[in-house]
Image 1 (spheres, rainbow, N blue to C red):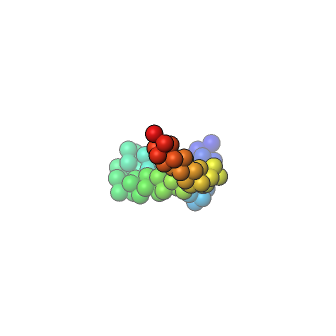
Image 2 (cartoon, rainbow, N blue to C red):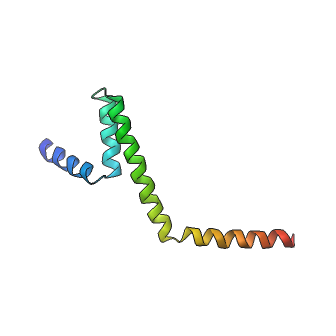
Image 3 (cartoon, rainbow, N blue to C red):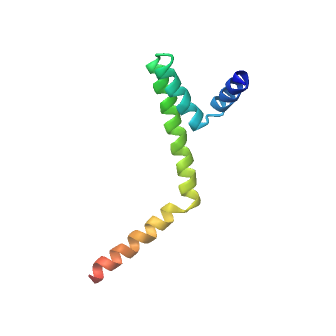
Length: 80
């Protein structure tokens, strides 16, 4: 079981899975007493999560929605 877990974790890390990177960062910090390596993993995790979040926002067409919102907001301010 432990070997399967280790293999799966390595596979996830190779594919830059944000959750696996986070777990490995915590593991390196607390169990291996390696803060510099831990911060590298945590930094990579944050970067991957930002990329994932931007892709989700892009599917929602957030830039277009924000532009429309700001346009209507300006029009309402002029009326008021």
